[in-house]
Length: 143
Image 1 (cartoon, rainbow, N blue to C red):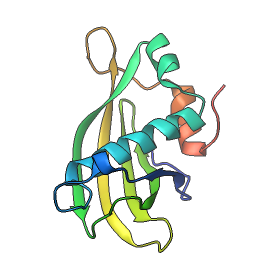
Image 2: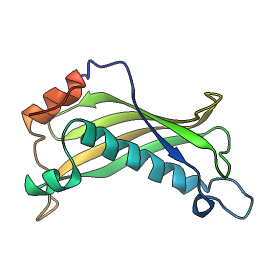
Image 3: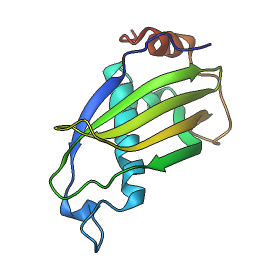
Image 4: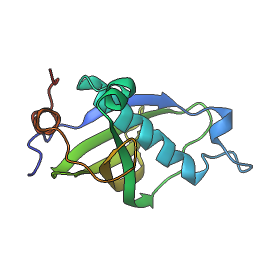
């Protein structure tokens, strides 16, 4: 199933001192943390806070990703985090994610991230609930 919502989900974060390396730029792995926050906020926007996911005995774990780094972010930059669900399969989601400087729109990092849906108790794959998949495709809140 391909996601029908072309408009990206957007959230923001600021670069703090803890995000930077000795060269004064964002340490590369921290872009992945920013993307994780965007995915978490996306699920929250659909009504799936972390506790609700745990209550439903499901978790999303990163299966694989492919990232490209374009330009550095620096201390105190406001970042625009964008994501689109490009595929909502039975047991995994494929996200297209971008990190941009909010003020200029300059692309800093982009990634394709595949996350698998697993059961909390044994980390085995499980089917994404249909109402959740439908909400992701529609880009709306789930009941």
